Length: 84
Image (cartoon, rainbow, N blue to C red; front, side, top):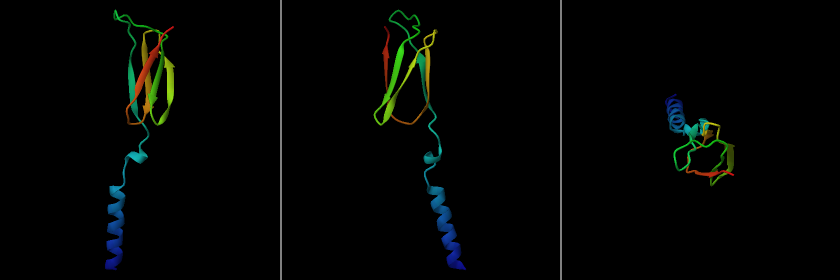
């Protein structure tokens, strides 16, 4: 009986040590406002968010210059902006 108790305690200990991040969906956010050199907001700017191990994500800034990329995994990103 004592051996079974030790096995259960060992299994419980292993489950408590398991990484919790594997169960958590990506929840990072990058948001901001696109402005020109004078500080005026610029709408309709093509934004590309890049991360080395993921496909790029694209969107356009809103009429108020605002943008928001959601559900991002941890890591380093590069944000590119292009306006034509």
